[in-house]
Image (tube, rainbow over all chains, first blue to last red; front, top):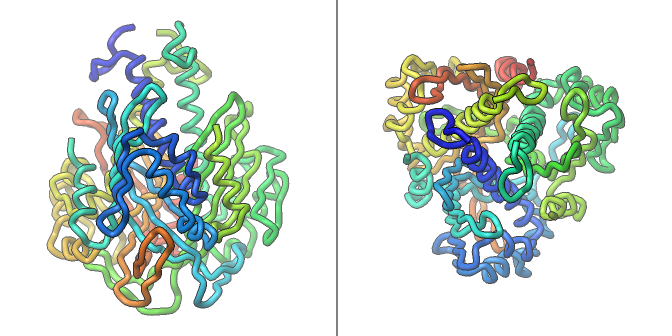
Length: 175
Length: 175
Length: 175
């Protein structure tokens, strides 16, 4: 097949890059569903064996697929789920280089309000509403394996004015 | 055209799958604009003739394109729009199988605060802010028709700790 | 290469349309990172030379790449960043026509709460939470240049019930 366009890539290579990108979109898109159901087995299936999940000094920093899956499905996490919780993912920025990829995305964690007035919105019912517990910057690192793309590292920092969150965001602006 | 890659699909088939996915992204991406303007005619154009929109026991459950469009553009809904309302869609997870597709997505509904203090953010003006009325799990079912992809069923449940919302999210983790 | 499918486009043309779309997704996906770090140089690199950024009568309306970059990285904006701020982008709707493209997207601006109670969410730590300062409708206009897709115009209006925001959203429902 002939090289195509300015990029010097074949159609096959370009198509593969697109499919890679969708695979990575889907890993990010499924994360809230997995977090909000405490799906340990699924979590284990999407991480690389030696993956690292870093939420900052405030939290444990599990290393290895099994430890990350355990942290995502422990009793404390299931308590959060029973009280109601929503991980909400924005549009990610994705950069793929061969068998490695990086994505920068934003994540909200929301919880139902348990106190305060009930608001009625016409045609949309009554609700106490939800509270945005945290908004964070995410840096995802992915690696292509024989079983598809896996998460090799995820770094998450709250957007509360701290330099660490800004450093994550700045890495989206390179290249 | 030769079969390509490990998937056994031709370039044409792979390209079509990508275009299908974008068609479905666009159906989800246009939903907030249609909901926040009460665009009944548009709503009718994106639903399958026998579509079902299920928001749970608390709400009516319109069946058929015309009933769904009517529910999305009724006077009560337009009252919500005039008071200010924003449907906000997160990154969806999409799975396509032939002429059927399923997407799981998160949706926020926000309304402007009408009470409480005004906050000034430097360079971003003053505002009473917005209140997150509800965060919901969405299950979208799509069908390919001679007029393109249409919504055949949409199920929406609030992420308030209830099992129904979690069941929707779990269906994103299969396969 | 043979024409493919019902669209009458070649594989090369279809592939290019997909790559164009991803280039535009990435411009929208990187915007929050650039806004939340005050990255003037990056801002200048993604706008067309004669771009216009219109946030409504309440705000200045910079015209030209240099003025827009200056407005995105001025001391007042950096003060907002130091206090904590998050621009949060929803899934955009994108329409490409040759060397022009339009996208309609939703944007939240959130800031950390500085007053009020601290909420503890099991497994997710303690936080005063974030406040949704504004939810806006965005209309992005893009132009293809010899250096790739650039933003030629961006119009942003709060979804507070005003007609101007609804007019932006309605433009997503055409075509």
